[in-house]
Length: 291
Image: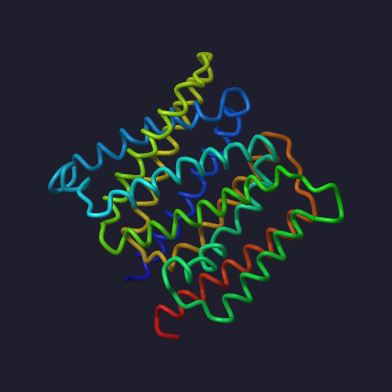
């Protein structure tokens, strides 16, 4: 991999996080006006159309991309992501973007902690120490015992756990299926699941909010397209640490647009969590290189 490709991959990952942060901001607004399930359902309709269009244009067409020897695993991970998105968007409406993303930033540490029992990977003492430090950061954010505990804070924490599990199942699926096959199942299964649930919560939307819904769908498709491009030009281990840019982007949007505040404990805890997560990603890369 050339230095130019590495630089391009990093820039693409930062652009991806910015687009996803904008998507989160739009989701926060729409979910505050309409039922979360309906908002996520419409978002998935566009997402499914997007993945089907990509699959149809690939070599071998839709049939090749959809073929899998592990359909139950693919259905499970697709459904899990759809539910996780609903939980996270609910967190936006309960806690706002700042605190939700600060808590959600723990998910790489959860992936590291769960990679042993789920994937059978070895987790050394350094990464276990980083995981412990990261959870201290979460406690700093939540401040249990120092103030009235916000039960709502468990919502983004649950979302982080679900997303970590989804990430591990995706890695497990990659042992037999290609990335484009998993991407296809993610979009189509999610659309089916959300339609089965969300259609019962349909609410009429204003013309202006349909424009915001269109923007939500476009940012979702654009973000996933950028992510695909990112991994096509650079190694995942190189660009993954830059995924943390979504935290300041989303926090900035929450403060500027929604009038949220950044409390000292949230800023301090988030810094601890991100530092621990970056160390974990670095150790994983060192180990992959035989270090």
